[in-house]
Every structure is written in structure tokens, then in C-alpha cells.
Length: 423
Picture 1 (cartoon, rainbow, N blue to C red):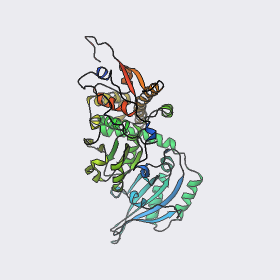
Picture 2: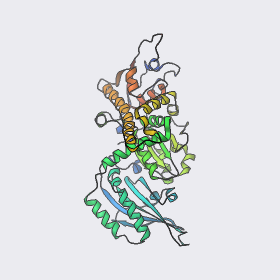
Picture 3: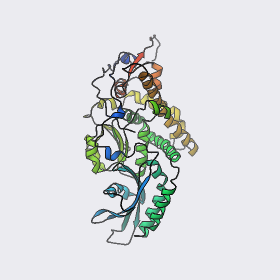
């Protein structure tokens, strides 16, 4: 997926928020903007990884350990001629040490990386009674790495107990090259589960994240640890901007890239980014660097909007987010209840992801209908069409920004209100 530069909002006539949605949007006209897929490459290039996470090849496997005086040290890699400089710093993500076992997904120099961490209590003053290692793998896409994650965890524990014994890792890597596991279905199932967990964690605020992703803003999730579930949350947040495969082929919404876990060394690239992204971090310093994000989502706390960023008003929580949340709760049923069984949660997870896919697909459909005519792209919609797109009263600013970012003009056909109308 190509990143999209954030379209300026100054070209849109913003309707008064005191009027009804249809009334306010009736005469909204937004100029056609450049196709997001043609956006110029920027400082995020080295972080983005492959354009398509479902395909790709494995490139290397490595072992790094934490030295009490020198810090993160690369200990071994295969093949030896692949340049992995600095990968060990990202593999030892802040917060990994809080758990005996943990993991992280991240981007490095245009590649995707998976690392599994293991901590072993030892009777050694030199190691400060804790031996810590990561085993990581570098590839071109997320899915192939996902399928090997379990084996990487076992190898991390083994090499941490039997220091210097790397032959099993080389054999595993050579075998993985010959037959990569079918990881795509596993990722799809985990993505639905992650979206449901994100909905449980954020409640109505999940729609603030949804709006930010659709508008291609810089979204950063934060949790001090464990790190691996945080990476799942990032996968879920990015999925909030996806639509059905058929719509993706014609007029995709093009959410910004999923950068996975980022660390302090990525700060400059994030600050200089001209397009949006979705990322996560376990480093608390990012909370003090609002120049690196438009929306900051610390787990268990209120989301923070960078009011200094362009279009910040579009991201604040509104009554419309509450209306969407109530509708989502009806769709997923009892899946969020503490006593929900596994089957109920699976069904709820699938429905939760489908809820967002359906809204986004309807937006794609309206965008495609507009582009089928002569420019500027224009589409006629009714109030019920807006509701299918997830648009409610109070969404005037968000809808104006959404149409601007996607090069659309929506002509809203209003229904004449009666004395007992509740629209």
C-alpha cells in the first residue's frame, strides 16, 4: 500500500455544525485532489517495508543479547553477508524485559522483522541475574514471518539456555526457505480478534481511531508492555481503514502504511512524515513528542489529539462516535461480555471486523461512482447512504475532510422533514 499525503482541508467549505447533517452537507463541494497512490516518497521510506505484506521472501535470521555494560549486541546472523546494522536496537524493544517471553514486529531499512524475546534467571552477578536474548527473522512481508513466530520463540529460549549453539537456528532458517508456512489465514483470524480487543479497550474511542486512519493521519498506539499484544493492536487499527477486496482493486481508501513497532531512533522520520501512518511504541518518550503524531492512543487512557496538527478538529470524539458505538455493540452481541465463550468471541470478532469493512466498502463504492463520471468526482447520496458509510449527525467536519482526502463531491439529497421526524 502506498502512503497518501494528507490533503489540505482549506479547499472545503465547512458546514455549520449547528445544522443537521444533510442540511449542512447539501452544498458541500470539495476540489478533486491528486491520487494518493502518486504521493512523493518521504522520510518514511526506510520504515514502510514491502508494499504487500501477504507476499515476500525471508532474508536473514539473527541472535542478539543484552550486555549489562554495552547494551544490545548482535551475536550471530545467517547469512553473514546480509547488512543488518542496527536491527538489534529495534529487536530489543522497551518493555520486553517485563516478561519472561514476549515479541515484536517492526520495520527496518525497507524490510519487515519479527523478533521473539526470552529472559532467563541465572546465578551470575556479571549478567545481573537475568540473561536476555532475542531471535529475529527479516523478510519482505509480515505474513511469512507470522507463520514462523512460534518457532522463533522456541529458538530464543533454547539459545538463551545453550549460549553459542547456533546450528539449530541455521537448520531452521534453511528449512523455512524451502517451505514457508501458509500464514495468511492465521493473520486474517488474528486481525479480527485484534479488532475486537481494540474495541473492548477503547470503547467509543475506536471510532476516533477509525476516522484518523481513513483521513490518513499519524496514529500512534502506546503500551509499556507486553509488546506483542501492542503489535496486534496496531494491526487492528490499520485494519479499520480496509475495505473488501473488490473495492480495494478499484478505488481503495489507501490508509497510510502500518509501521508496526517504532522506537526512539525513528522519531525524526515520524516528525518529517508528510503522509499518515499507523504505528505503535512501548517507549513513553513519544507521549512528550506530539510533533511525531496526530493521534496518540495510550492503552487504558483517553486518546490524545495533537491540536497543533492540521485538521485536528476532525479527530475529536463526538456524539456521532457514540451513535456508531451503540450500533457496533448491537452487531457484535455478547462477544465483549466477560463471560463470553470462545465461539461467541470468534463470531463477535468476525462481525466486528465486518462492521468496519462494510462502512469502508460503501465509502469506496461512492468514491468509485463519483470517479465514473466527469471530474470533479461527484456522487449523489441520500441520508440512508450516509448511514451505510457510518456517517451520523455531528460528522460534518469529518465528512468534509473525508471527501477532501478522497477527491469526492457528495451531493446529499435531503428528505423533507415532518413534525414528527427524528432524522
